[in-house]
Length: 393
Ligand SMILES: *Cc1c(COP(=O)(O)O)cnc(C)c1O
Image 1 (cartoon, rainbow, N blue to C red):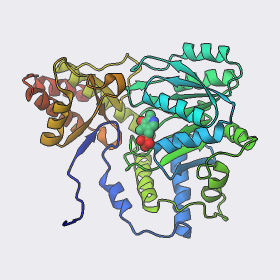
Image 2 (image 1 turned 60 degrees about the vertical axis):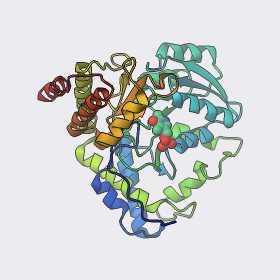
Image 3 (image 1 turned 120 degrees about the horizontal axis):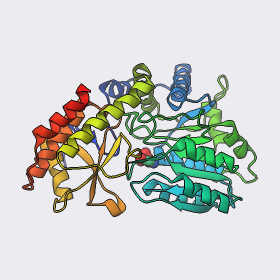
Image 4 (image 1 turned 135 degrees about the vertical axis):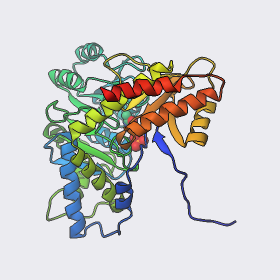
């Protein structure tokens, strides 16, 4: 068998992550590997922590990237904060809320579920009812930006409710970070995790996390050790904190951290608020174009994520065949629906570098082509004009 180097095809990534990675980030990934305790590398780690604090809008000292994908950021929060017997109220309005329940139960906690319909935001009233019915609860957990459904929940209000009932709040910001307004300190979020391949536009594989003092107090007061050796914050912080005396915990993914540093630097150069506004603008343009093609977004007004757009698939259109045309003829990846929405909706990501005018125009054009291939003629010219009208303001 002849083996050869792998050269990936050229793609445009407009699914639920990964998003397109900028050449600056790819170039950073290819720089020479150095030792993970090299003084130069320790300096880079400090810069990454400072840039992450800016992105999360926090002063939390414990703000760093876990060496693993977003799912492990989730696991790090639950495994450190939940002790066996703790009641955790988990808000579930999509796939990732369900994973939070799994995490709670595997750490020996008791999950009380607050369910909301898929494509809708978490209803604060239902959370409040659950908090009143469960005064023993210690934690509230929810997904701010549900990538499986395109719903944006009101994190500030949900965190306030948790605190009023003496609970700490764990927030999933994997898709939220960099794409929509998020204020860790101003909103009092106690523990938060994210990922690199959504609105930060890095390759996958790192999970930025941040913990405030209240969260650290709960971890310090544990009567049982954290079940996971790798994710025990008390141990991993010996590597990520304590300027002069960093000690070996695991070998950091050195080149991946070069990439994260470059992506965070690009976000810093653009400005966080400008990045939020950019995601909102391209969402408006995409939405206008899709509506002009007769493809309205699912979800409710005021609850839609700009960076993840749920589009209902018209009756009779073959989902897989359409996505195949997008990939083969246009090099364009969009996401399929999950769970009850499988075959019924597409998930179009406008995350990070993929939130641009070029992406919106390609997506509208390619969708027109994919529908035409199934005998559905849509007016692409009208769709592009509707998007351009948004850009003209
Ligand atoms: C992508 C995602 C995750 C999981 O991240 P991985 O990097 O795939 O492990 C968790 N939560 C949400 C909301 C996500 O979108």
